[in-house]
Length: 395
Image (tube, rainbow, N blue to C red; front, side, top):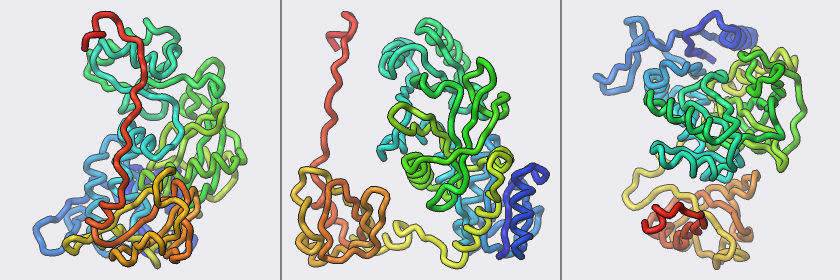
């Protein structure tokens, strides 16, 4: 395998470990500076220039895209994708993870448990937003913050309002998040590779500091995760479109609460804490996928007029529950079921005798109008009763 590690920090621990792991396994690998690429859109075939010369062929890339170059870096990754070069983390996945608000919106849509979060811009909406996440104390996060920078714990509502007003005045976007008191000063980082957690550590804050980041003086220790934490980490990474990710979780009273999914997780802390060869696991996964890459069926199969790929959710209470796939008449309606997703299990190419259960998800290819007719009427949101101030009761 010929691998390109996209990184602006060739001497960084993570970059060096990944390079060494690839070379030790007999692969050809190079570290390429992401900013030295030029995207060539003038020819019939997508191409890239590197340092002013045409780039040679690579089997795979491993993006290590920093916050400061997200836009250009993801454009380079996207071009590699157009050239059919394998990447474990797609450009779309990196973009999703890098935008904290977008990441929370995506994860919340897929029933991933997270601390209650609100995002507002108008000053009048700040206090109701604080109340909606459970009241003070609250955590205030800059959308662009990293390594614990821009994360503030506000002990009272008035303090939170003052901080948010100040940040808004400087054109900063902030999230308002519930403070999970039971996990104060501690969180878990799970390193996901493919469909499994290859290593996990607990980060513990120093002294009175509530942020557990190593860059803030936190310490790390190896931890054996419960299955619920492993499942939450793998699902969060895959929902974001990442096959290599660091998933940060709080240990809530009722289980894992996902805080963040990192598309370029550092390896030094977790390898030091666990003694595991995480870099090697990443390289082995990429080498395995180069021989049998995943494809985006939505792009590859949605080329015929009237045909496409869709996911059909089987909600409780609908008429499909309890019937077999054959009884649903899918094949007669020119619909082929590619996979059936049931919880964390995947049933490829399910047969007609399989009985549909509540919350099953069917990934199908076929006639779009037929699949559209199977989607139940959209469930309306139930209005939440909230006591309004007198001046707003006539709205």
